[in-house]
Image (cartoon, rainbow, N blue to C red; front, side, top):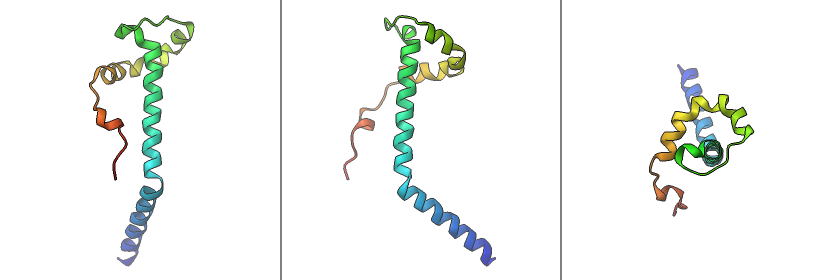
Length: 91
């Protein structure tokens, strides 16, 4: 019984410390990764949205890897975004 409580406390402390020291960094890196993925998809598939970007052999080479993400990218590109999401937080 005491061992179980000690383990749960240890896990809770570990999660708390991870959230304090690494949580914000993880969120920022995840957002940056998403922005780069959207930019790459925009360059490769911009003509589907009506952007006059020239087709290249690189985009044709990457096409088989990006086909599964195409529907998700279309929805995220055409979705309205909240402007307040990109403003710095006031503390």
